[in-house]
Length: 114
Image (cartoon, rainbow, N blue to C red; front, side):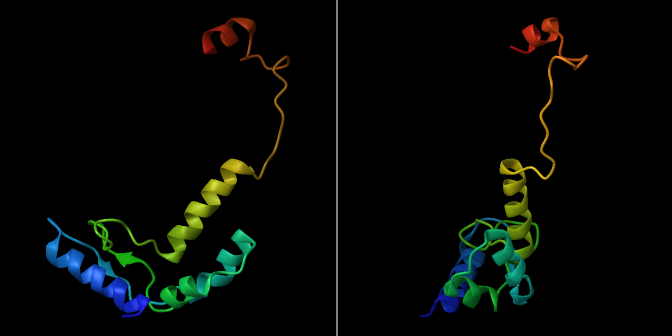
């Protein structure tokens, strides 16, 4: 059984055995997002990843995830989560706030904060 067959098998098993509604596999390709993912990561995507996402692009629905209840992210959601994480580490706008010039950060307010 290859990786794609395993994913379909797990999705089918989850659908048949999970309590409650389960999302469906998205059989569209995520290949159009590969270049953007590689640019964000500054890395070439692993072959296993590209092999999977050429045939499946996450899941469809708002119920439980297809992988034993866990969500199988689409390439768009992966990009969104990566951009959010990178934005926390490397903000687009970097600035240093001078606490001495800020009216809101008086000594009294700083004492309240700490």
